[in-house]
Image (cartoon, rainbow, N blue to C red; front, side, top):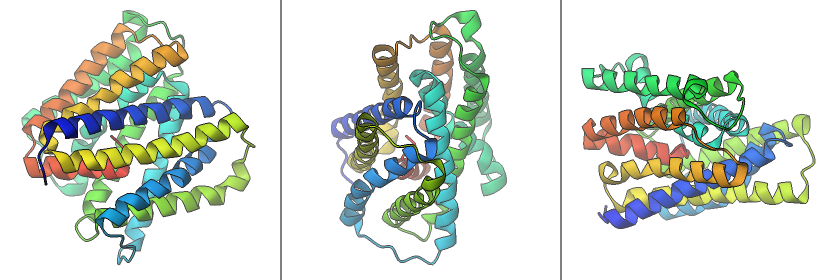
Length: 304
C-alpha cells in the first residue's frame, strides 16, 4: 500500500460529496416513487462500477459461503431501504450525522456477536455519542432550527439504520476471513439487484423522465463513491484519512440548505459534534489493524 495522505484525503472527501448528492436525489425521488424502486435502480446502475472494482482486484464469484452472502445482502438491503426512508423525511444534515452512529453500534454488537470486551474509554465514547443522538432528535425545540416539524419515527429509522449498518459491517468482517472483498461486493450487488427486481411488480410506479434521470444518477453516484472510497483507502493509512469521512456532514448541510431550504439548528451542530467527537476518539484509540478492517469493510458496503 502506498501512503499519499493528500490523495487519500482528497478522494475520501470527494466520495462523501457523491454520497451526499445521491442522498439528495433519493430525497427528491422518495416523494413520488417507492423505496424498493429507488433501491433497485441504485443497485442496477451502480453495478458496472462494482464490476470495474472487482476486475481490478480479480473477479471471483466462486464461493463456499453462498448462504452468508445472502444473509449479508438481506441485511444490507434493509440498511439501504432505511437510508432512503430517512433521507426522504429528515433534513439531509440530520440524517447524515445520525448515520455516524454506526461505530457506536459496532461496539455494542461486538459484545454478543464477537465476544469482545470494550474498554472503559470506548464505553465513554459510546455514551457521549448517544447523548449526541438525543440532542439531535429532541433538542430542536429547545435549541432552535427552522426546518419545521419532522416525524419522530424518522429519527428512529435513521438510528436503526446505524445499527443495521453496523451489523452489515460485522458480517463483511466475518466473510472476509474466507472471501475476497471483490467477491463480497459482487454478490452484494447481484443479490440486491435481483431481490429488488423481484419485488418491482408489486410496488412499481412509472417514473417520469426527470425521475429516471435522477435514478440513473443515484446509481452512478453510488458507484463513483464506492470507487473513490476504494482508491482512498488504497492511497493512505486509514488512521490518517478516516476523519475526512466526516466531510459528508458539510456536504449534506450545504446541499440541504441550498437545495431544500433546510437550515441546521444549534441542536444538530451540538449533537453532531458529540457524535463525531466520539467517533474520532474511537478511531484514534483503535489498533491500526482493526481500523483498517472496519473502515475498509464500511467502504465495500458503501456505508461511509
